[in-house]
Image (cartoon, rainbow, N blue to C red):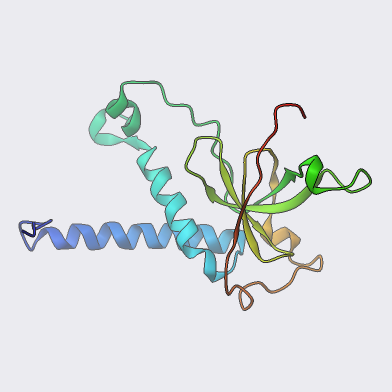
Length: 169
């Protein structure tokens, strides 16, 4: 049995406006960071999570998630979309003379609260990590003139690599 999501045809306009708003805000975020068009879905995803965590006029300017869960919401994990980030490279994955971190760009949030998704511009991959230091003032667009490749045409397949933090480091 199928279930109708919207009972009235007039409600379709509301959904269209919400989708248009999400796409417009996501597009602006992606353009502001000057990330390639391949990351439009990541920008819309972050936009959706920000709206869901935003203040609501109908709830006396309280946060939606706080009203729903009844708990105080921690927003300290939110970072700037497209900001430069330095991810820790595990000792087993590097030699003792190599750098302990590598530059990436934030493109989203993972499944857990302190899990982030990053773009590896050099290897054309998506990386997930939580061992990271953020540089909120430097965005992807600031690094374009410093020898970066044009990744918009080269994004064909995105691979996920998960770095795990070991307790004895």
